[in-house]
Image (cartoon, rainbow, N blue to C red; front, side, top):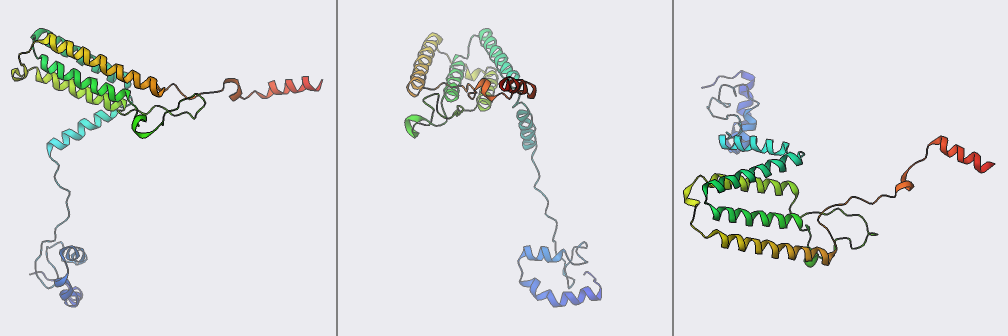
Length: 239
């Protein structure tokens, strides 16, 4: 049993009953104030494992996920390098499929997925057909930048992951399903034409374009003349 000083033992006798009725969280907080806490005991000599609250162990997979997420966040401001890398990966995938002469189903699925991402990128965050007219219809209205349904960074990140997954799938013959690829190509081209036609009709109907042209400025009216120039004008007026 633990041996405490007499003064500490006196305090133990006064609060022993309260400690017996208190929940474990209260026992943990109360035990932190006793001199015998480091020895692993509570007042009265009864041993008790109060322990310290330690953070849960982080798995190696979660560490890798945090490391990758940190590097992905660093690429947010580098727009052109990101899209250049994506274009190079698409070229690598095309060369891979050309030499393997297969995986047309994977290519078709990748194309459909990229098309859906493009439609979300070109669509406004608030659809005027369902949520009312929120887009400016004249040049005299207040400037509001175009807000996309799918932001640029999310568009790039989703496309990047899809291309990486498609490249990896070309190394597994199970995904190389026999199919007559000209039919898939014709159907994909038809689907692209119909989808873009519908999107262009939507832009014309609600009078918007999926880019922000910048806020209107007023040229010379916003410029402040130098003191010397204004003084010269004043002298001419006085004459």
